[in-house]
Length: 56
Image (tube, rainbow, N blue to C red; front, side, top):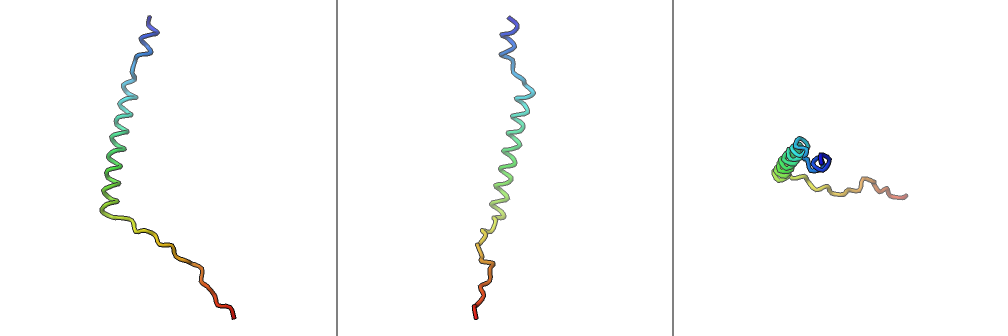
């Protein structure tokens, strides 16, 4: 009978760690989005770095 009750046990420390991780991840994502909105990254333009030389 004890074996069946062990299967239903919840590891509260593990569940708490998951929730805290999710909260931190959410806060980090919100901060990232705020910075991205305030300081948008300039879109990189593809430039041709090879200089074309004229044939003589």
